[in-house]
Every structure is written in C-alpha cells, then in structure tokens.
Length: 332
Ligand code: C5P
Image (cartoon, rainbow, N blue to C red; front, side, top):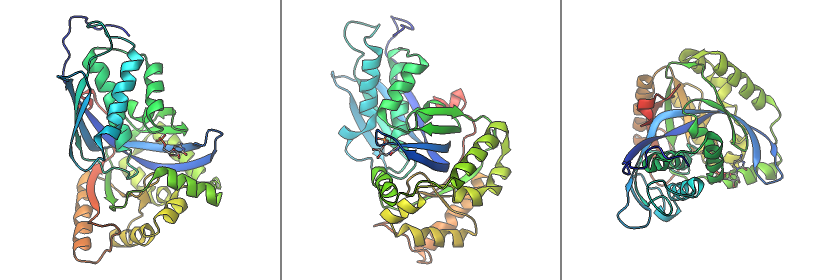
C-alpha cells in the first residue's frame, strides 16, 4: 500500500456502478475448474446503481440499501469487496491496524439476478471506492486479482467502457471504437434466473457453441476496436440478437421467456436479444430517446394485456444507452 497523504482524513466517496449488456456471448468450452471460457463483448450502460462510502461510526462495515430489492444485505458483494480490499492493502497509512470500517449506502436501480451484472458492478465500485476512501492504492494487477476473486464479471467494470471478455471473465481487452451512444431498451421479467442453473443446463445439453456465435463475437470485437457508429451497431442487431450461446439453456430454465421474447420482438418490430444468462431482453435503437418511446409502447402493451409477461408482477422496463467511454466525471 502506498500512502497518498498520511494526514488525509477519510473522505466520503460516491461511485456510479453501471449495468452491463452482453452484445455477444460465445461459450468456448468448460474448464477443469467448472467455469466456462467465454468470448463475449460487454458494454456498460447509463443505467447505474449509486454507491456512497463514508467512515463508519462503529468498528464494523455497514450497508444500507434503498431502491430495488437487492436481497439480504449481509450477502451483498459490497461487503465482500470492502473486506477483500482491506486485506489486499494490508494495513493503513492513517494509523495502526487495518483500514477503517466503512458505512456503505447503495441506491439500487439495476434489477438483480437479471443478466445485467449489477451486483458485480457494485463490487467493483466498492473495491475502487474503498481504496479512494482510505487514500490507498493498489497496482492494476493486484486490483484485477481482487476483482476476479469477487466474481467472473467484476474485472470488466474496472475498464470503464466496452470490452472483449475472455477466459472466465478475467481477461479484459478494452475496445475504444464505439462512436455515439446507442439507445437500449431493457425489459426484465420478474423471474430471477440463476446463472449456475443456466450453465448447468448448457452442460447437460452439451450444446457447446457451433462456432457461429464465436465468429460473430470476434467480428464485432474487431469492429468495436477499429470504429463503429451507433447506426452501424443498430444495423447489426439481427446478428447480435442470436449471438448468445446461452439462449437455449436459459429457455430451458425459464421456458416462459421464449414466447415473451417472440411477442416483444413482434410488438417492437425489431430483433430482441438476451443479456448474459438472462432474463433481461434488449433491443437496440439509434438513441436513448427512441428507446424511451419503445419503453412506453411496451408498458402500454403489458397494461392493456396485449403482451403477456411472465412473472408475479409487471416487468422492469427502462430506456438506457451504451457508454462508449466513461469520463472521470461520470465515474465519480
Ligand atoms: O464467478 P461468478 O460467481 O459470478 O459465477 C457464477 C456462476 O456462473 C459460477 O458458479 C458458474 O456456475 C457460472 N459461470 C461459469 N463460467 C463463467 C462465469 C460463470 O460457468 N465464465
């Protein structure tokens, strides 16, 4: 750990934790450790959770969650991330003993267990935010190792823009070529989908990718490296909507998603894809405003009974946009 300023007081820190969308997801194979090696283009969205960290009065980290239901606070990855960061820095320059306890407040806007990696993003934000609050530094390699230990999707969020994800999620290559901010309509039925269940179904079917998704994924990654406009990306929506090797496995775990996805695509008149292991469905638009108009159409159709949504309550419907590159201002 390097002291930035030993006399510095603990500063309250705010981090915005973006959701992610998988534009492609190829499953290359199953590894010896049970995880799957992937080839996937991840993009961050303007849909964010807001995390604040401040010195805690007692000697223990605390977490208060507002907004959407995030499950039991004690199991929240924010706690694990702060604890892992404390171990990684190995001491505190501001005094004896470990880095001090933090009081975390999380305003949850990203639905959980939805294929949007909200929990993983919160973990990355907590790791980064805790280091900042303590005035501590970790080199990039150590930061990436802590992130990977927290979950497969966490290292992506250290990059702050579109990236190619390989391995289990630990190999992250930034893709700097997205110009503009394509709009995204997200529709998340209220049916939590367990990622391990989807991968288990994938293995049971032995549906290892036939290579077509891998090809689409490699092609998109190359385009996003060289340069692609929002309009170009939207023009590829048809290919991208089927570029997810987990689609059949998710359909097996939640069969009601299949007619819903078809109905949504018919209603919108455009391709609809699945993010990660789902159940979030997406459609791409040239702008967030156009995605917002589509969100109104979906909400109206659900309320009128013209689009039957699975789940105990109305689906989460929102318009957001892809973040081509996060500025410093957006990150803090
Ligand atoms: O790493 P994380 O805890 O987020 O992964 C959740 C589950 O998703 C794993 O237990 C595993 O079943 C599955 N998974 C996988 N291959 C990956 C990522 C996740 O099999 N690359």
